[in-house]
Length: 211
Image (tube, rainbow, N blue to C red; front, side, top):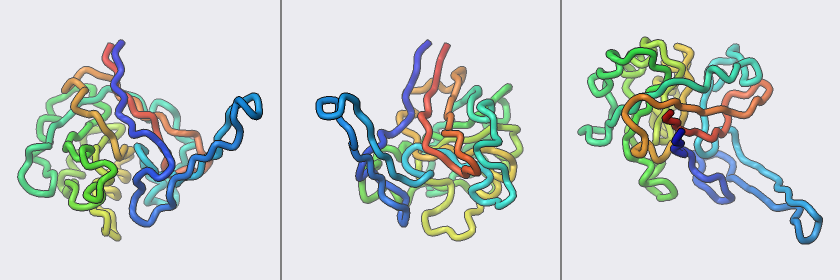
């Protein structure tokens, strides 16, 4: 089995969505002094490589403690949209997904992860159109993955792509990296979150596995 790590490193001062609390990982105990090491960790549930569930936008949706691990593991395929013209991912860019059988996760590679930790990262990244979101929602997927901060613009107040995707029961995995190291098809995608009571999102260790 070969694994591709698709996860950004969690660390103090890492990039966070505009307006979110900063990440702080503080060493409270060290081996030389205390005989063991331990950290105190403080960051929002949507920090770094993380997933959104329906509870992120729907008040009556189940939390992460109600969702089983099978929601977060399955067969994946990559759609390379890094060469599209324009700022929006449309249904036509994703049409090949309709011909794929037994697909659980559509992983959209924009190449935007190259801007991680720069001022541009939370700027003019590619977003998903409402039509494309409805198309993805109709494929019977467990979720989608993105190497961008969001399927919607940072300044969106209505979150149309989020709402459509999550209303169809998908999870949305954001801030992926290294998607280019994955094969186009034939891999298992895993994005297991913490089992947080009433949790609407969680950092994940996202990986792609080829058997």
